[in-house]
Amino acid sequence: MTRWIAALALLAAGPATAQSAPPPAPAPAAPGQTTCTDVQVGSSQSYDCINAQLRALAGAEPKPSSQDAPLTSASPGYKTGAANASATANRLGSNYGKSAIAARPNVVYPSGVPHLH
Image 1 (cartoon, helix red, strand yellow):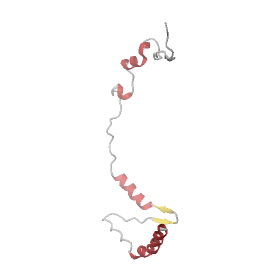
Image 2 (cartoon, one colour):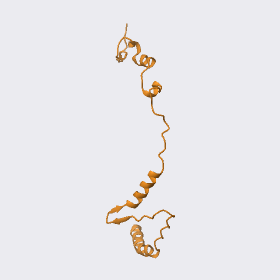
Image 3 (cartoon, one colour):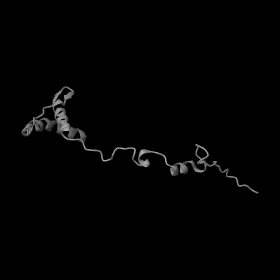
Image 4 (cartoon, one colour):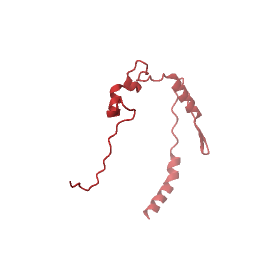
């Protein structure tokens, strides 16, 4: 019941408050700048003016430089991803120098039954 009363109150007050205040006047453009007017026809909207201004603004400022220096042949191995002997020995375990396949210990699955010897 209270929802209907609130809805009727909003409907009664809606058009009166919407028409009582005029729309705010657009701010004047700064010297050398143009103002934009975006157009909406039906459900399609055009942003051509603001897109053109943003495109011009993006081309005017230089792009920030990257903080990381480019990789060169003098870069250390940990940055270029090169393998070194200590890392390879750690990865291969006891198979280092014997095989290209890393050493993996045999998996032992406990049975849960104690051995009585």
